[in-house]
Image (cartoon, rainbow, N blue to C red; front, side):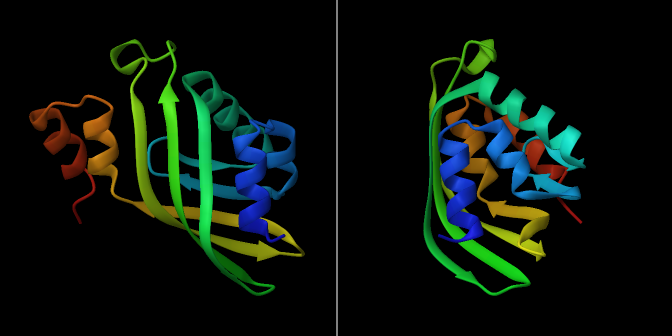
Length: 140
């Protein structure tokens, strides 16, 4: 197995402890929807929130390249929004992307991801005007 595969397995099992163990104590995690989190306590809180707000997760790493410093995984991600998010509850979301894992001593020091957030937001029920507003925040 590889760090990206171990990550996807723990995520699909909604194993917060297993996920947190993959990261260094001061790791950073840049999530497209939940923002930046630093340190294991913040990561634990973010993962717990994700699992409250969704169910039926399937994070599939389809292509992985790795060495001792970096790993990258191209993936497909899907889930169903839970009742914790009333405006989107029950919606099924599926999109692809890529993650970059910066590694240190066999653990994740920094994580960031790239994906088509517009596609995900449309599936969550965002109207075009709201979608334009959210995506415009990403402009340089």
